[in-house]
Amino acid sequence: MDNACRTDIEQGIANALGSTPVALQWTPIGGGDINAAYRLEGGAAAWFVKLNRVDRLAMFEAEAEGLQAMAAADGPRVPSPLTWGVAGERSYLVMEWIELQSRGDAAALGAQLAGLHGTTAERHGWHRDNTIGATDQLNPPDHDWVRFYRDQRLRFQLALARRNGLGDRLQSRGEALADRMAGFFEGYTPVPSLLHGDLWGGNVAFDGRGQPVLYDPAVYFGDRESDIAMSELFGRLPTAAYDAYNAAYPLDAGYPVRRDLYQLYHVLNHANLFGGPYAREAESLIDRLLAQV
Ligand code: ADP
Picture (tube, rainbow, N blue to C red):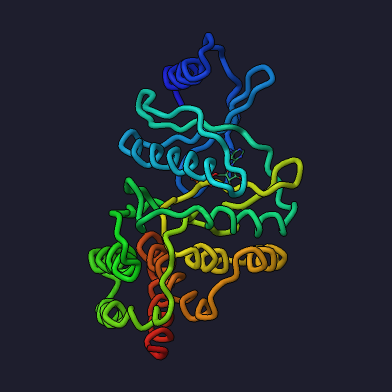
């Protein structure tokens, strides 16, 4: 990264802090899927910065607003966003650095997730669109969850899959599922809960005191079961987290069937981002779901 870009970001941090800019120490961090990331250090303070192309600024704005919404809820700790914008050829987001570790208080994670989901809105969706991984995620507010999930989540990904040439069978089976969507919601009307939106193990950790930290969200209001389902897709959270979640805010008895429905969104997104094998996994999920309605 060039010096002009660094200087712009250091200026952005100073503006946000109301201080004079200083040269920070930049250390590259691995592990992210989408963005380049650095630890920035100056004096006693440290920040985490993500960088991408200029045209991805809206993605960082949405992430910053998502972190702010989560911070205002009674949920797990999230890094506090400091400033974001454009520096030279890059867009960036600077947030609080949190020294992350993989172990901590799993029961607190479950209880605090229940707290996050206890923050509700009038309608599903959000005040703005955002991204799930590198894919657009549209959030036009809707009081009808079945319609929202069917059109903004499943059909959106199916349309992308069509453009990506992922196969006719996926389209026809996916459409059949979309048509029968209401069958999964008999006797169950989800309230619009504040969701992390991309709750897999890689976006969950613990701070130095062992307290849970969530990051890299794709925030919107929706059925809380979809967060729990995502957390069970690529590995699982510790069992103590699910036990504490259920003690604080029990899941509906119909959750195990809808888990497949909610995981399908993320599997389709993976098919669109990474291709082949995920498309076949999506088809078998759809087959399993269609056998139940
Ligand atoms: P990406 O958007 O590219 O997937 P992430 O937000 O997942 O990037 O961050 C990449 C990695 O950096 C994470 O897996 C985590 O280990 C670490 N990380 C994320 N946020 C912070 C933070 N605020 N402080 C310290 N490390 C962080």
